[in-house]
Image (cartoon, rainbow, N blue to C red; front, side, top):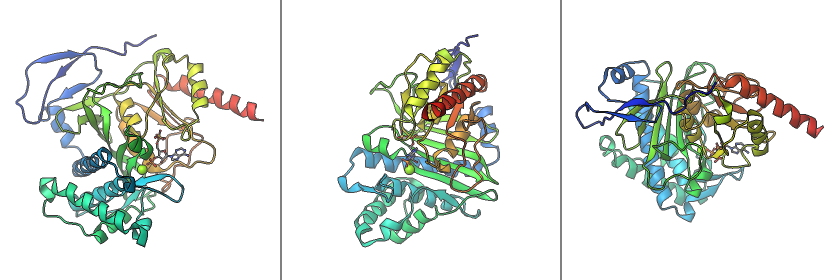
Length: 396
Ligand SMILES: Nc1ncnc2c1ncn2[C@@H]1O[C@H](COP(=O)(O)OS(=O)(=O)O)[C@@H](OP(=O)(O)O)[C@H]1O
Ligand SMILES: [Mg+2]
């Protein structure tokens, strides 16, 4: 049975500064806006992890501001290559230093542990000094643009230390922040999608997640790769365990509770996947989509912006099948995972197991990651297993 994807729900317009609006607008979007001072919003703000969520939103929003500035006027010298030959930019380092600094500053009474992608090794070398200087300037400029930190000036040594806060191993006990300062660096360099992804692990479970997606349109990106250049962009998704997923614009105006698509008709379900063919097997995902009867072409975008878009029902499925031998890192999925699950979705590996974030810096997976709603999951799992089986038989 087909579920009406575009169920009409009332949308209450609201903004941080304006009075509560009494007018109801009807929209074809499947999520609704909540005035920030409504009972629902107050319930959201009084739940546990409240302080941590406020700090995480502040940290990622500032990081997004730094990234936007760098992306707008990218210098050749802003881009370097890591030892695995993947690109890293002053914005990756700057974002990590900023998030680390803000979390420590905002949560002084908590022991601070962070598992993050970057380290300061290359910046401590003689050849890294100019880059370190540029990062330090960017971090200080961004902090001074935020009223509450105007008197904070970090030295280059402070920046190195803040970056190296990310060396924790994580694990099954205690609290650990999990950060990808720029997820989708290749997308960032192309001028496309990227995200700053921050999550909190508490005794091995993801309890909070924030995704800042500076280039993601506020309106649905649906089943097309052609996004209107005129629409507003910049989304902040956030979730805490048991409290749902919310989206607001990075400019901070409206707060919207979001939910995943409820369709169980795979033919009308569009699917998301990595932009980079090197990051996911597009031929395998195409055969899975074919088995499901999916009609729309894949939506290929970089980073955990895919999880954000899925959490608000822009598409119904996300498929990720890295090439053999690749080990997934927890920072590439922790924030996205809670953003989708709190919006009503399901995230598993190809065998249907929930992702386990308690094992350190890596996820131990059975081939790939699949995401959809609970109604579609049984048929998706079946299609995935058949496609994997076929692939194995054809390579024997
Ligand atoms: N070989 C390989 N296979 C699979 N995945 C890889 C691979 N190499 C890198 N990565 C990780 O992919 C992150 C980018 O996420 P996506 O694949 O969703 O986006 S993209 O389409 O590649 O841009 C990317 O994130 P960032 O490194 O933070 O940019 C990597 O963590
Ligand atoms: Mg990254």
